[in-house]
Length: 184
Ligand SMILES: Cc1cc2nc3c(=O)[nH]c(=O)nc-3n(C[C@H](O)[C@H](O)[C@H](O)COP(=O)(O)O)c2cc1C
Image 1 (cartoon, helix red, strand yellow):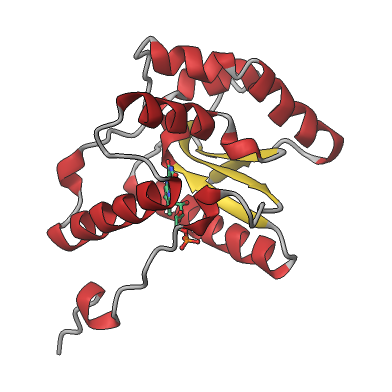
Image 2 (spheres, rainbow, N blue to C red):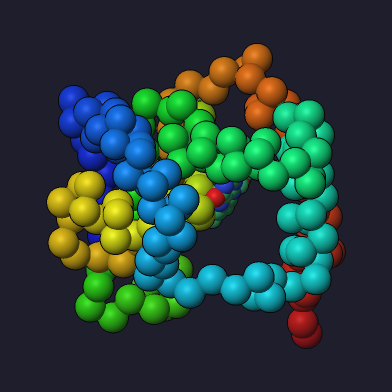
């Protein structure tokens, strides 16, 4: 069974605030290169079409931020902002039960996440799935006191600031034919 660990109600803000105030915990782990991803990551796991879309979105995002791709300090500042959940008051960390966590169980949590995102959108709540947060699984577990589960993804959520430059970037939508092959 997938396990979703979502700090709830009053605790939600407190947990996000604690993570942010110790934000330093995630940022420190990041600065020290203390990564602990439960699910391995490789740049080449993306198909060429996905790579192209990532590059295009990166250019869009850095364009919206007015950041030069080669500006190391600006990119580091952006990473720090990511690790502070872009200022969102809440963050949900989605874990897969440790038992037999693999692609088959992770897909359930992926479906759970999509439903969560759509439900939040239906209630007018904005969200940002952040794969980056899953690179610091040990730090997140430590901060939440969560002993169990493999961290798949974090989802920051709240109400978007429409005036924030980061929110000016728009991800394009790929045509169905470029993402899906119908056989038979
Ligand atoms: C599984 C997953 C992981 C993601 N990880 C990150 C991340 O670590 N940092 C980030 O800024 N955006 C990340 N994104 C992209 C944003 O959440 C978001 O999808 C993107 O900004 C485009 O917005 P849109 O989906 O509303 O079009 C991720 C998206 C998904 C689906």
